[in-house]
Length: 450
Image (cartoon, rainbow, N blue to C red; front, side, top):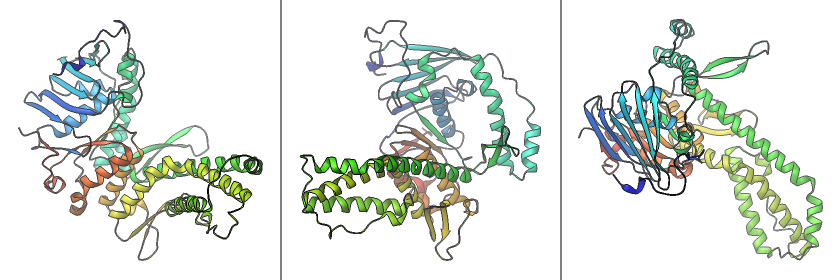
């Protein structure tokens, strides 16, 4: 193992702890090793950060378990990790290394090594058990609501988590800072084959007192989240517009009386056209109304210095207003483009009044998200998780992405993820059985059969 993670006398002192760290402080995961998995397997593979790494292997070799162990380390979910049969796990990052040793059935030792810091060690004990209530009534309740067996199982797990997690926090609230900040230092997202299972969101009770839970489909939740984001950014745009419009006249007169050089007629015309292209793009997406896209300014007296001062101030203001949409546009444009490529015969848009809309190009009628095919819903929920559910530097792990995906979608999936990673700043590990998904990319394949 490389000695770049060895202890170094940096003056931090033996007792100094790693403080709360920025996102992806550890850097990206470069290599994963697990020893004694199920008492049978040892796996070791490198992670590609530019294109998706694809884990292959026969059933039972531990593809899904590998993804889960990485996710549990990221979340600091030692309670789940300790239940998995293994001896040792090593995660090597660009700037650090984490090792997890299972000393006994109830004890883990987590070690962090970083250049310039003393080695940090955390001992986790899980000798107690959470009190878990009888969940049969939850299962019966959800079954009576019409959910499938798979959906009922997922919802019962949600109920279990709400009971077990507070117990974990109570019994393991003495974690050091570097342990509690792992999720920020190493963000990871696991997307499993249950990604279409129902989710829950809070809503006011019928009489307006307190809160209750609504059970909604995953795609309905995704649409709801997108609409909330759109409205939030429109509110920011409106606030920025009001603030700039309030003192626009004063700033125009200040510009007229300044010695600033505002550029030539040609420069102003080019800048205006670039702004119009941005407005048109935002209008196509649905973030602004199409009526905000103006016509040419070629008929205006741009050779006049006062006119140049006026137009330049207007252009600066408009850029600042539209810039409020940029964080959303960077995610929303590729999201909509992704869906348009895969949804044949359907129009995808943001409606100014109703939010996210899907309609038939043939009839013009709206299509409810829950009426999309299972494969179309999978693509929607997956793209939403990748573009809206992760921060830059996140390792996204997808378990059997080929489930419910058309074979043509599988053939372009690696290319799709590579494009998304460029936008979202994420990288990927896939666990797959699909030869179509692999499509000859043996350079990205990591076999667990060896």
